[in-house]
Length: 412
Image (cartoon, rainbow, N blue to C red; front, top):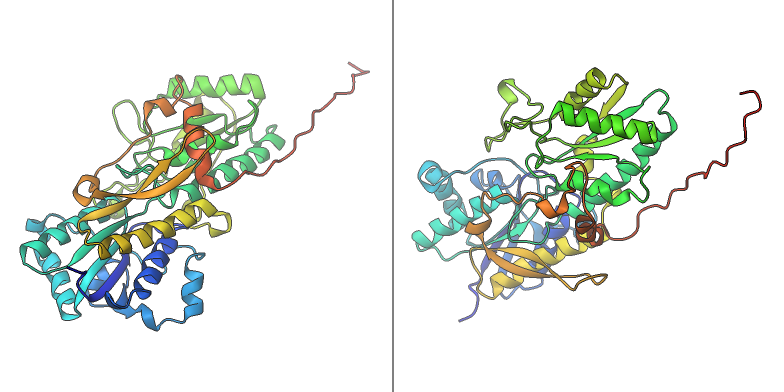
């Protein structure tokens, strides 16, 4: 029995990335090329919100030149959202509304690009379609800069943010190196609520001991003021400066986030605490306990949408994941997420795709494993560098440094 013919809807969810549009391009181009299965390809405006409000657009009517540029465009061109659909009992009306819209438009395929919460939504929708005997295929496409999805070697979007973060650490670290007499310590905060994959990626640029970053603070390692102050002082004794990468989700030994936003906007739609002050908290500790000036900074949304420094490997794999989702659906696969599978070893890197149950991925987080964190808990290991290096798509800039052959003093 061949694949059922009907329309396909593709949607994007969660934080935009430099590669999620490449995944969408993989879905759209592959579906449009198979008219015998897909009678139309629609984009849902702002994720599932666009389905709920019946705001969809016909991607087959878009200019081919624009579709061709989608793969190399940042952010989420279809529009994204953080709209949480909970369990079938609690949010059943919303799920039923989605199926009602899909029935009205003869939508038989739904491709959802997003993180673990999005895979949960896709899983519940697949369950309800089966329960109500509506023949529809749901396939998830992985997406998160946090790299915290389980059952996949890595996530589309991570390679690009890793490359951007590494170069930021290299270049901002040189700023601290040049002006340590005034800005002695700098704390650079990056995204990552409960997993430190983004922060860890800064370690890729440290070619010598004096190179930034000198310390990496991960959410997986509880932080104490005493340990931090001691580590910073050790860096000052050795390098006269200290550049710190700090994950936004760094916690104290009791599991409390170092800095949380309060008030009406303290939680997002998924119930996640909104973070954004970890670097300020670290700065306060450094200035109070070490007694030197400390600068705090963060790149904000720029880090997840920086197409100018995207990883070519990441973009190619994101497209591959989107295309694989469509091919799997045409083969009768349902209720699965496309995964990235690493092949080869040593200096050989190759990535292919696999499939994993949506239910397994939904609402699960993959932290940085212990073998990727050094014994001191303040940097990454060679095992992590070997894991991450192929994902950034090429070598990083080879910036110079003077050897500084000092002229002997004559005046003492």
